[in-house]
Length: 465
Image 1 (cartoon, rainbow, N blue to C red):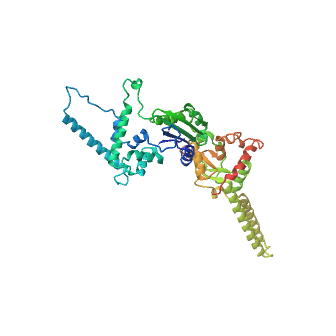
Image 2 (image 1 turned 135 degrees about the horizontal axis):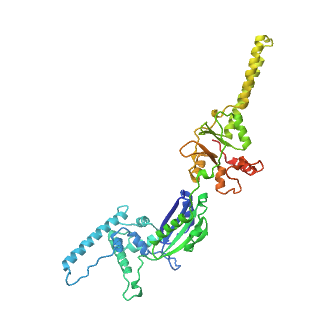
Image 3 (image 1 turned 90 degrees about the vertical axis):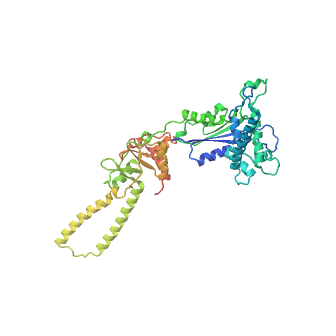
């Protein structure tokens, strides 16, 4: 029930406002936890000069080309010996064939970056190529990269300049992998890229399932800090390839230590719960509402299957309809009495008058009790099964704009309880002093005062259908 999102970006330098970006991404997404990582090469010195591209930027631009494939794949060199040396013609032919293949593959890479098909690369196309490789580059870096690649300084990079740039990068990569002879570090593994810095920023939404999430503690091992729902850390990397593993490790640790199984509806619903029958009258339902201070009750049939729901709104509407009918009846009765004659006093008329009075008395009793529930209850209502999680029920309450939902047994319509906004508030610990399991229905009036006061305050959240 908890969604964790991780985003890893690469840039040529630190980006201001990452915390605000992370918070906006969290709010705009459906994630509950958002971890944003930024990898960049730290720059020393404080001079404000145009940024020249580093080896990392150049390598990213050539990602997917044979230059980078050769840099990551060990090259097989045939050492010439007297017994198996090739003649010069065969070696020359092989070198020409390799050069032709290299240029062909570089041409394919160049054409993919040449978005407008002009045969040259401009700054916009260089920026798009870096973005496709996961690099967020500034304008200064793009201009420095263009200056490095553009040999004739005409503001464009043609294919020959692209090939020359690729070969320079290959030579630099090969040089960085070959340690000097008699060097103390010659026996040590050489990093394939320059040291980098990883900035990790974490944000988490509040919620009942997020109570155990402590981002500040999670990032402590990397020297970070913050509070439970917002934290950050700075990690020094020997190689940028370490960044994905660090983020994956944080997610695994978060799942193992902080995320717990959600409660199901059956664990915190109000149960047992009052219910009404479809043949009960408006007066009887109103008496239940007044006596137990409830605002909604499920309607069940003889098999205890949920068939509807009545709320205070339906009761109020039924009372209004009954009052309107009573006023109409009184007006018709007064009109009838004005047209009656005064000399209808014979025996037959007297007997008819007695029968009419009996019928009128029965009708008056029916009017006072009101119509039955099945005539004005809510039908086709939403129910939830007892095995649903709290997050799912909370989403249903908000999505359907209702204050309560009947809870039924899994796979049936059998009523087992009710879940209300008050139940959710208890789980969120907004009101920790409230009783659980609806004890207010069996406690004294004095003991029920906190619950009654809370329910009255919650009435402001009720919306008309």
